[in-house]
Image 1 (cartoon, rainbow, N blue to C red):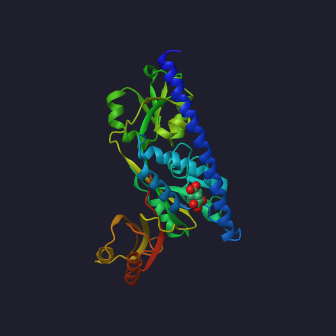
Image 2: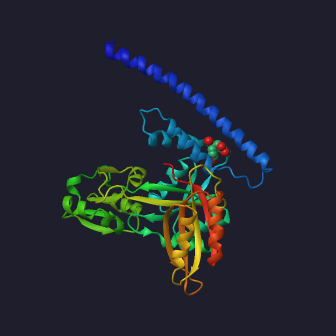
Image 3: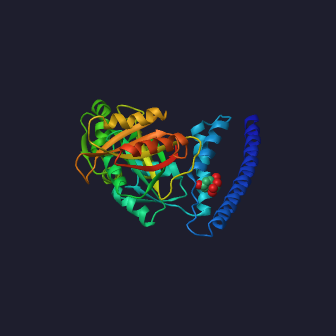
Amino acid sequence: MTTEQTELARLRERIDQIDRQLLALICERAKCAQSVAEVKMRGNSGQDVVFYRPEREAQVLRKIMHENPGPLSDEEVARLFREVMSACLALEAPLHIAFLGPEGAFTHAAALKHFGHSGVCLPHYAIDEVFREVEAGSAHYGVVPVETSNEGVISHTLDVFVNSPLLICGEVEVRTHHFLIAPEQVDAADIKVVYSLAQSFSLCRQWLDERWPGVERIAVPSHADAVKRASERQDAAAVAGEHCARLYGMKVLAKNIEDHPDQIARYLIIGKNSAPPSGDDKTSLMVTIRDEPGALYKMLGVFHRQNLSLTRIDSRPALSGARRYHFFVDFIGHKDLPEVGAAIQELSRDALDVRCLGSYPKGVL
Ligand SMILES: O=C(O)C(=O)C[C@]1(C(=O)O)C=C[C@@H](O)C=C1
């Protein structure tokens, strides 16, 4: 054996040893999660047991990132532990997650990022359908977009909250990178047509204009559709998200082709329960006020007096009555904090209605 071969054999033996230790520890962790499930069942006499605990998951991931000694990045170690927890939770009870489809959409990527790959993710074709699935108990949780780089705030999601009893129990952000992809057998030089969503074309316009000026762009309803159409031809490519490229096993011709990189989309996790404090939380309120001079100024004054930091505010006209607006306000802090309680109380004095849509851990990954 050469010295290189000896060195490799020695290192691989060490890796085998470590893998054995990792396997034993992961299995021990899984058994521990099973015992946690038994305790939860005993605590609730087996009725309506909530196995998924977003606040605990956020704490576990934050601790892992904080204690990460390297060389793997914080995001990478958190992703690995995300999958370990996902598998442990599936042992306790398999989670059913409804998301705004189709498969391969950025919302699908958000669901997998948040819940890992051991949950059962099911696509639905409208935002209110996702809400209905969770309300009816056919899915434990739902994932819906609330803000994307191409459409801004998703007002339909906000509108559905008005008449839904569901609560927000988490948020997740996804970098909406776009890839130019093609079936394995297609040569880049042969491409005459590119399929994608109209919004994705506008996000990648400059790049496509410069590099693929003569190529026809055909808009289709989804990234998955774009991939399917491209797969049926020998001269076509698709512009889609990274997750979609992986899901359909396409060849990547170019990565991150969007004209403004670092575009981030935000998704909400909806369920029947809000989350207890995790130590770093957000709260979402829906405040309904009369459309009159100074009403918004007064409302914002409450947050200022309670020293609460707003992360976003959106308004929607109330459909049920003229001259009323629903304000959707997100801020840092959990509803159990005294200053948040005081703000809700103060807001209730002037507003027509104040509803807490949920407190939840700030997105970790
Ligand atoms: O701590 C719990 O309640 C668990 O069920 C364990 C665990 C984990 O694997 O760490 C699994 C699922 C929960 O969502 C949170 C954490």
